[in-house]
Amino acid sequence: MSTIPNHNQYKNIGIAGLGAIGSAVMHALTSEDGINEMQLECISDPYTQNHFDVDNVSFEELAERCDLIIECLPADVVPDLAKIVFKAGKDILFISSAALLIDPQILKNLHRSESRAYLPSGALCGLDGVVGMREMGITSSTITSTKPPKGFAGAPYVIENDIGLDAITEKTQIFEGDAYDAAKGFPANVNVAATLSLAGIPAHQTRVEIWADPKAKGNTHEITVKSNYSTLVSRIENLPDPANIKSSSLAAQSIVATLRNMGSKLAIY
Image (cartoon, rainbow, N blue to C red; front, side):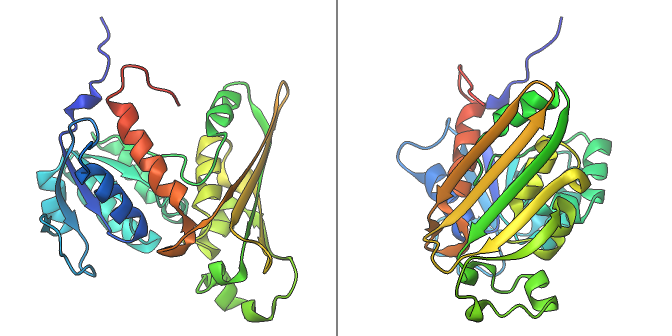
């Protein structure tokens, strides 16, 4: 007789990275309503001035003390955390999905471990349909992301190609390629593209367009996914997170929603 996984086992939660996303998740966990009786056990962020009544510990101690680790880190730090979490056999929720493309060893190590990984929808919508279409066979998958130019500041692709963001006066395409190259070039901006590829077809088959628009008020993501039987088109417009213009508030709330689903009698994905 098969056993249904009991996700209520997650009692002690740890957060790695306390930037805009990590802080929002922390506040949800520690609010009066809380989330499914989960407790914030500790955090891990050496760059945070810790004014909270919670221990700020190393990755190793985070993995030791917590049942589930919420990753809210820059993409280049994620492999270090993942290695430690998998070694401890603990479970993890990734929000920096671009890191899973940039460093394929993360997923290889996951499959060799006893750990389980969760990937929330982040700033996208329609991923439930993409996952369903994958069962039928996806023939093409495209995502177009548009943000104000300043939202791409510091991106490796922008720096390497000497793109003058301040000089952009009209909507301009600054990248076209596959999800793998997009993740490498824009690790803080296109987690949506990485997530789409992980939900659908491989990264080298997932097409990505990135546009900078000085008239854009927020971050817009449009996806078009096709199979022999269905065509899915979705568009979402998000205001930038005031604490991090490269992301949106929806990214943090998708983590909160995933945590709530884990303990729900009726889980909707």
